[in-house]
Length: 95
Image 1 (cartoon, helix red, strand yellow):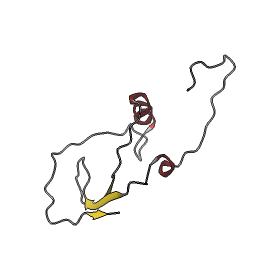
Image 2 (cartoon, rainbow, N blue to C red):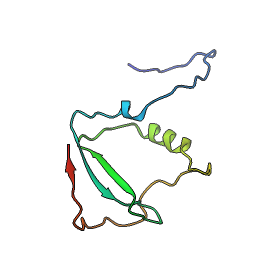
Image 3 (cartoon, rainbow, N blue to C red):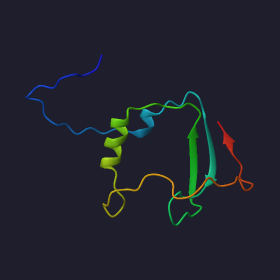
Image 4 (cartoon, rainbow, N blue to C red):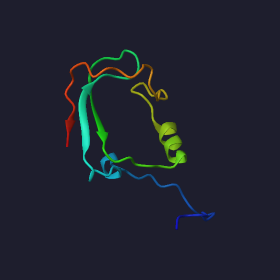
């Protein structure tokens, strides 16, 4: 039921993971044209929101944040810098 102890002879191994393989797509999704949630807040994003909530351990999220950098190699910012926006006539598509 999970790894509880590592051998003293364990070595670090690099693996490749495709993010789409981690997502449960059986429940469908919503998509809409939107904008960045951090400055400059440009309207250049197509948001895709899965219908099913996927739970992950906080430790996994922390490891993801620790490994994520921007184009300049700086640690990425996570979160929203602006309040929820009105729909403003945008279409929301359901799959």
